[in-house]
Length: 124
Ligand SMILES: NC(=O)c1ccc[n+]([C@@H]2O[C@H](COP(=O)([O-])OP(=O)(O)OC[C@H]3O[C@@H](n4cnc5c(N)ncnc54)[C@H](O)[C@@H]3O)[C@@H](O)[C@H]2O)c1
Image (cartoon, rainbow, N blue to C red; front, side):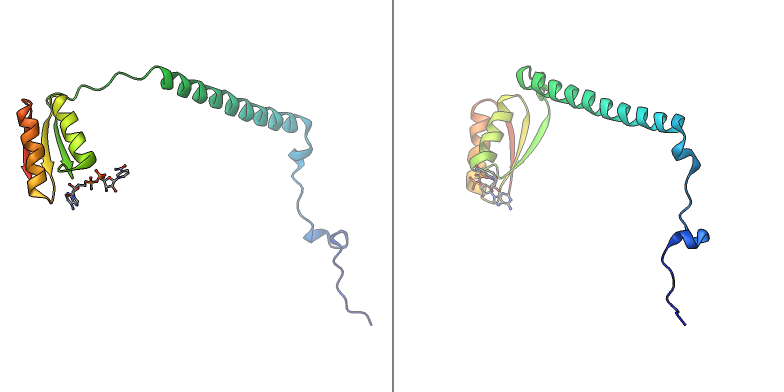
């Protein structure tokens, strides 16, 4: 006696995957094709728009925000980038709160800002 089970699904219709009848319907297939085409078209239109907008913004920079009167806190204000940022923000009319672990260099930045007529406070 043979006891090997058949793996052929045609011999067991109950185990066959159910076919969606609408997938063979030409109207449904056409509708799906239109959806895919629309998605692809929308993708290309959006891509071109984003690329063109990026190129335009590279050439025509947006207007700089007016920060005069704002209060800016800069950490590491005693040296390097922090010091440069502090001096530049002070020149734009902001009140600069300078913070640094090095009290001496931090105070030098505060003094430099005040010497140019700017407003600054130092914290260590
Ligand atoms: N210089 C560059 O080209 C560059 C590039 C990318 C990133 N960074 C980073 O930017 C930061 C500043 O760079 P930099 O070149 O101006 O450094 P810098 O060493 O010239 O100045 C750092 C300042 O921060 C102060 N400081 C250190 N620890 C502090 C703390 N815990 N609280 C407050 N102040 C503190 C120091 O006393 C010093 O005055 C660093 O973290 C650096 O790694 C620098």
